[in-house]
Image (cartoon, rainbow, N blue to C red; front, side, top):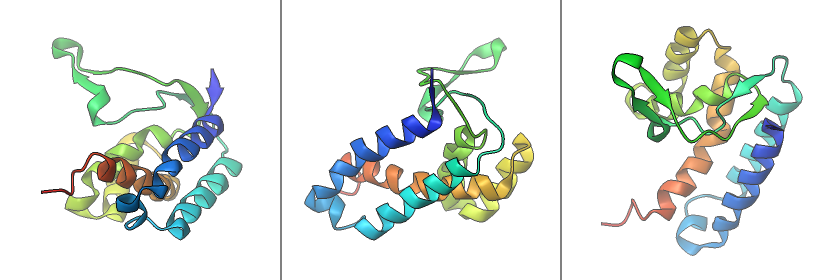
Length: 140
């Protein structure tokens, strides 16, 4: 099992190649990408608690298990910052409440550091934007 740092390096490299695509590069600047990578490095460098992470916990990987409750599927297990797995809960609801407010709600519900959670949401947001643009979701 690897560390979150390795997962981050992998997805920044893999997803970052898509910035060369005109439709994506027109919306996600190199400067925004670099900012996200620097934030990621700072968060990784200041990690004080390491836990087992799902590593790819988003709403599509959470299923209703009936009486057993929610079930997480398709893990990319790694060790790292406990805030990382909660970041998709922040970003998914940020449009309704705003990122900072959503961080407060999720951090309080999960017993997490709200500032670190907000930092991770700023790291992941451009990655999710690239994925959104790559699916053609903005085309009508």
